[in-house]
Amino acid sequence: MAFLCWPLLLHAQIENGGLPRSFALERSLAANTVIEIPSPDVDSIANEDYQDALLEKPYRMGVVVPVSLSVDNDGEWRNVAGGRLWTLHLRCKGAKALTMYYDKFFLPEGSDLFVYSPGGKDVAGAFTPANNTGNNSFATRLIPGEETVLEYFEPDNCYSKANISISGILYAYRSADVHDLKNGDDYGGSGSCEVNVNCTEGDMWKDQKQGVARVLTRINNSAFWCSGSLLNNTQQDFSPVFITASHCALNDYNDNVASASDLQQWIFYFNYESSGCPDPVSEPARQTIVGAVKLASSYDRKTGELGSDFFLVRLNNNLPAGYNAFYNGWDCSNTPSSSGVCIHHPQGDIKKLSTYTRSLVSASWESEPDTHWETFWTETSNGWGVTEGGSSGSPLFDPGGLVIGTLTGGGSYCNSPELSDYFGKISFGWQSNGTADSNQLRPWLDPAGTGVTHLGGSYNSVLPVARFNTDTTAIPVGSSLLFYDLSINNPTAWHWYFEGGTPAESDQQFPPVIQYNLYGIYSVKLLVTNAFGSDSLVREDYLNVSALAFPNPTTGRLTILLGAGEHPGLTISVANLAGQQVREFSYSSNTNASVGIDLTDLPAAVYLVKIRTDDSVQVQKIIKN
View 1 (cartoon, one colour):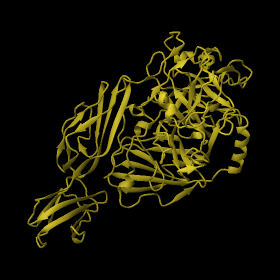
View 2 (cartoon, rainbow, N blue to C red; view 1 turned 90 degrees about the vertical axis):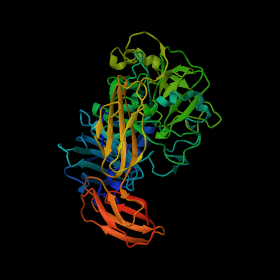
View 3 (cartoon, helix red, strand yellow; view 1 turned 180 degrees about the vertical axis):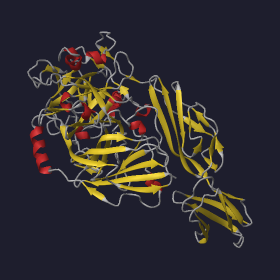
């Protein structure tokens, strides 16, 4: 059956799960026409990247190809049960992966959007009206390969029009391969000496890693991999404050700095890591947040200097409970640490960990003295973790698990692990980069004005966690169910969505009896909210509401209870247990709640009755006396 699109109560740049409707149909609804997008000049790109690597610039992984594509002027529309589908199939030859950048993004109530690879191996979505933003700017995450399909569903009762306009396509030319293996490593192709964060070296850092994320930045028409971390603040209100490097927002091709609109299209990837020490056999799941607002930066446009090289933002949305995010603590006391780690995403790869056991040395990166910590890495049991392009902005931790710096750069590589790296000091960024709040960390990390020099990290233990249950997940059509809220951390508001149910929604903690009058496979969603945030739980294909064949056993005259509504392309076939079809009944159009079939001339036996429509297939075993 078609999947229902659920609006959220809060604006969230988070994928809401589910599958495109075309996946549930027997026939493919992919667009027949593939729109070819011109590829950029890869030779010119390679030359620029070579020059930039010598200058410690951020690790560029893609360039934006300008386009002008919209739901009104491009793609194809087709009618489906309950509404219509718009599909747009794009190809940009040679791309490792593609990302869509939208200059207009508005979805009406009841609609949804998915972005996926042909064949459906990688699916991003559902994006719903909850993803609408005040400034219309939006981005959807990388889809591996050189082709991408957009699929938008508009319901029959839609009272407003979608506004989907794509102004740019990110052409990822490295660190986004679709193949399982490349350069001897999984996914990002980082150096062979790197240590996965869940090796034994990371046993003492399981909390801290939960705050570290990979960042796909955009600066004008270039995109870069960087790393960074959530930070706690003295109000401990779990505001999604995130730190990375200032140079991650700076593209020196023309001294470009990430604009406010660029920041709205930054994508933050959490929990992108292996589950154990070995590289995973398949790419980890991606949990993303899109968009941020700048709070402060160490970069001085007048002098062109980075200072302690920090860039502080607030993510557009709170972290859902399912991300298990840790808000890392910090220390601004300027005390050299004797040991610790850096947690990072080298070349955009899965999360890695590098270890140091030599005391840090106060150092300079540019002309300003004592802005950085110089760090030397130590060989450990599973490798000799270093840093690479894409590690920029990653946090440096002291033995107590507090952030004391953010990575600017250095000389360490797998072939020269003994060389040092440099991390901009939290202590210098605290209030020494300038006098304005926009140049300091202190106003944002100590908004309560406590004057403390260090603060521990914390999980958001007061964020509500959505949970629910019901008595059974398999019922005949026409039956009713009760649902039970099991959410924790004291939600104060509830919103249920019952696909295929009546009523379809409820704001009660314990909703009324839900009636299912049409057979199919249905999903259920619960959104819970309290003063500290919200969480949602979607159980896909949760309920099996079956068409009912009765009486069973039967002497031959059988009634098939279908439930109210349309049953497009209805066909009922009967087969014996050997799989041989013995009867077929076809209905070009049917809106009856039930149909009768006559099997009186068949011998007594056990048969399989297959009930098929354009949208679903159900099989029921019957006994013929």
